[in-house]
Image (cartoon, rainbow, N blue to C red):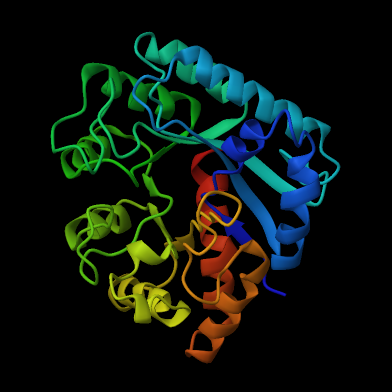
Length: 304
């Protein structure tokens, strides 16, 4: 069985949303599927998509997720249990002042990766669906503070202007934890060839995203093979050493059919490893894509 490093999954928000009805959801629901799929390390993402989010909203969710991980029988922030995890933030909408202090607080509470925004505009940045404008002064302060504490800057949801601002400001190679290729499918969330080149030349990593509506508009082609075509596209230009995976599974959320065929949930990710081998990838390339590239980035740049 190939082991996997998943750079993106909104599990933090999921367990927080079920805190009253299913307080053991992390162990009882998520763990069996991750174990079946071969997850070694995963991001536990807390998602904040609403610009009205407050800092207290962020604090409440991050504290709860920390508590549930520490209580877990199966998850830990190191390899002392079955699955190693780190907390990530998608959209730091609640930071409206005092960015440096708040970034340091997040780091102290096991946040190791964060995006400044989701698809919309907030006090820090402009999302991919809300225009194209520069980072705000507060957003610049955030990036610098993230560099100070060795927290990865995720560019997956930002607009192009913000992408290049972050690349210029950041002293650490950037991550696109869950993004695909605009050269194959012109979607606002996908990366252009110049963006991909910039990430690769500066030592970053791109996590491929097998959510079907970011792979192709043609429903008949929303398949595992079509997703692997995205990996092929990057491999042909840059090799496989900076390709990773950010699955963003949603089977536990509103749309259980959002993934490409063959990757219905995290329990089925060995299908990807097997199909990569069938498509001519070497065992080393498969292991790099599925685990070692993301792991190398985290251990090199984030002191993880």
